[in-house]
Image (cartoon, rainbow, N blue to C red; front, side, top):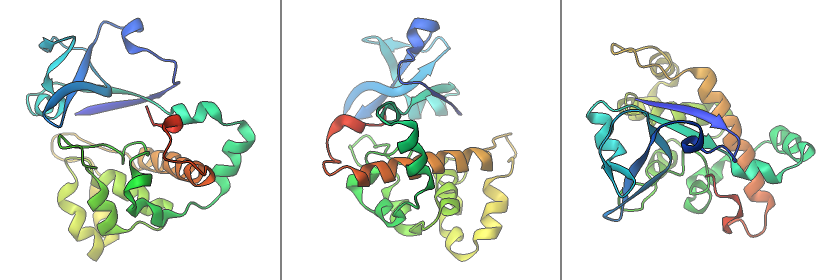
Length: 203
């Protein structure tokens, strides 16, 4: 199970807590997870978890993600309001160069490929609610509903936002909040001519 906290970009978990940095495999190399930490006695290798976060999850370790949206630090309140009110070009969520820069959706697998791009290209979300649904569907406990979502969205929504047998629940309100953040990010990317620059990486 993962727990997510949205925090200012200056927040450093290791300065405030006794915790251990999570790890991930990227092209056969173990490297630090961009925002995940453990508050448990997980084995270490070169200062990070010796167990990649996906395997650690299966073993029962609980990762806590301290998320920071660094790109927001460059925006004025007026710009933020403008990007919130502007309808995003949701079709851009089918394009790798945009998705790679977005929170939650821009996660890569061990081979460096975007983990959720195929889901976005399959569902083709075209509104805030559908983006929120995608964010819920990519959770490990909900991925089996992806194909069924195309057939009956309302039924799937009644399932993916309900608590299952092991107590797992991804709240609809959280999904909408994350979707709104993604919409703001997307509008910000579109507004920048050089959006492939690293100035607005999500971590």
